[in-house]
Structure formats: structure tokens, C-alpha cells
Image (cartoon, rainbow, N blue to C red):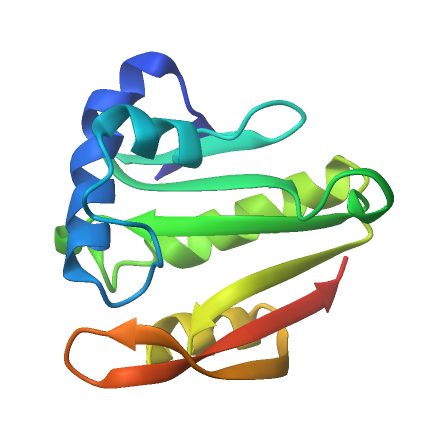
Length: 161
């Protein structure tokens, strides 16, 4: 599997992954009613950030973006988001993207990384991030409206780089 920088030509393959993940309503607060352009504007990270794709056998199977968590005095802390195509789940795509993004954040000079909203019922993601050195530093109770579980918490996860 190759992890590389996103190019605009990749959007045609990233957009269906984005739609599937967001429309499932289980892991992102993004609005499924957003237009393709609104989704692109949110997902494709402007400089100084980066957007990446995971390519396996010539096919894009996942994507991630990395950038400052906050501007100005908060810009030394990175944040990132990840999406994996449904048919590539469980094959190590998320781990490969996570490892790549952590290395890229370190290379970009970030001091740490913070995830602002990891849905607590997304046990696979929570476990993966903990295995990659993140810890839960707080949970906002009932902050996410899960389509089948109802209100569940959003974890804030953190690790130093």
C-alpha cells in the first residue's frame, strides 16, 4: 500500500468514500446534505495542512487530512481525520494512514496531536488511536447523535509527538 499526497484528480475516488462514511452517520459530525463542493472544502486541507490518500493495487482505499488544530497560538498542535472505504476495512489501511500522518506531523514540526471528536462507540478507531499512543483526555457526554444508539459521547484524544 502506498500513502501519498492527494491530488485534485483523486477527488473522484475520495468523494464516494466520504459519502459512504458520512451517510452512515456513525463516525463524523459532517452533514450528509452537504454538496460535493462543501465536502471538498472541508476534507481537502489547505496549506499548511496536507491531505493524503492510501492506494492499494492502483485503487484509492482511504484518505486522511492533517493540519493545525487551531490557528495562531494553537498551531503547534496538529489534528487529523481519517476515512477508509467500506471494502478495505480491517486490512490495515487506517493504521497505515495513522502512522503516516503521525510521522508527517512530526516532520512538519508539530509538538502534539489532538483529535477533537472521536465517537466513543467507534471502538475500532478508539482502539487504534490508543495503540498508536493516544489517550482519552476527556469525553463530552451525549455530544454525538448516533443513528441507532442515540446520543453518545465524543472523546478528545491526545498524544505528544
